[in-house]
Image (cartoon, rainbow, N blue to C red; front, side):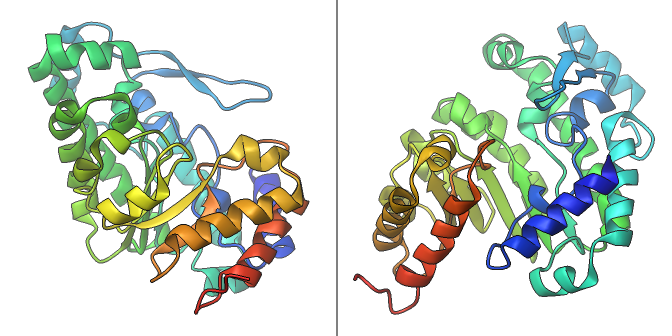
Length: 315
């Protein structure tokens, strides 16, 4: 129910006016995270009653399928797959999202959230094939990644037709956490940066809460300003070895189970470790877990007020 989604997101923002809830938190939801690339090329999603959808039918099963898809050309994101329906829902949000919240927080207008990028290409065949084909069929995989990325850029353009010129680009992609350094350099980084480089001048955010501490020097080459990082990478090393403004990184399941006092302690620890000098957004290391009590969100807000004002307080 798109109307109920909008009401819920607006209600959350009004309940917590101190929170900046980007970007999934203010956009419509309809398989938009995993579904755009797989369904654009003929894949099918399975819909769950109480969980996000997943890719149930892969459009790519054999290397020859990539050739067939390439011969068919780039599908129109306005007409095929999940993206077509999502764009309609986005139009509803664009028309009805409250003007005051848009102006205060920068929501909706120029906000581009196209779902998984390289990982979306992986989900068109399954993670297992994607990883195995890095070794067995690297040329085929590059051909597919070029096609998928070109479609993804057209999808970004279609989103811009609804919300206006890109001001914020939010790309979730976890493939860096599934591969080694060499595979990242060859099969992930070039395609992520092809998208990020298209939007120089916008605020570009990379969401990946998976472990990448084994190759921070390579991750640093991602051409984005903000990285929402996960709870199992050392925040101090991430700050020292990358250029990003870091967003994170309290583990969402822990955050959901913490007492307010534990939330305050975790927030204080992060602020004291990496907030000095700026370049830090305090948040969970990934999306909030289901069942997170509102009192814990309030505790995070109060911790920022207590410890996060510059010059930083160490009381």
